[in-house]
Image (cartoon, rainbow, N blue to C red; front, side, top):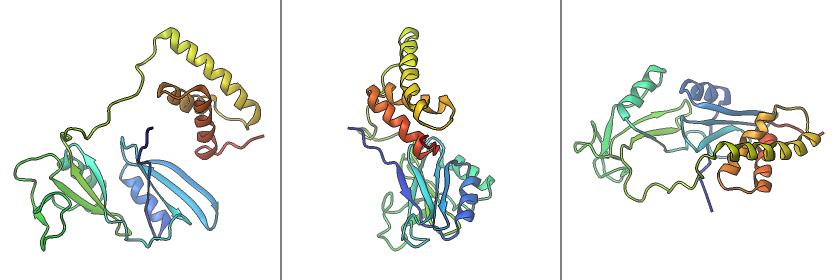
Length: 222
């Protein structure tokens, strides 16, 4: 069974201010959904990340300034830091931990400068959002053995197989189209095809596409 970390909940005091900050970072805005004056959900995803953050109203009872810390893996901490500074973000100088990554048990845990040995996982920078929620940039150039999952995605299909899969998708979408409000067919096709190419059967793929249309695009039934 695949089990991927999907969402982290971020406590904020001013939703629009937080939204403007994460837009400034260049993160992808996935959702800004308002149900009523008491409930609003906003989802952002960092570039090329499979996990996202959610904040808003009625999302979490945690106090703002309580997220300490989220970690962003970057290939080059210098480049990532420069990019954030260019976007107007206040980023710390690069540092490493005296006792090793994330070891805050020492009196002065952070030491200025990159890891002297240039090791992957050991060099950092940090910044905060307007609510004081803390973020760490961790430079990971080479992952330790056993730290990556083997890819399970099926190889790309040939033309004949792809044509058959598109035909299958069209048939399942036709059933959905009859019972739901007007929408773009490609929005339903994309999650269906993605699920099928990742090993799901047609029924599971159709369920995934239906959930996407309902939860992300909010397409109502007729």
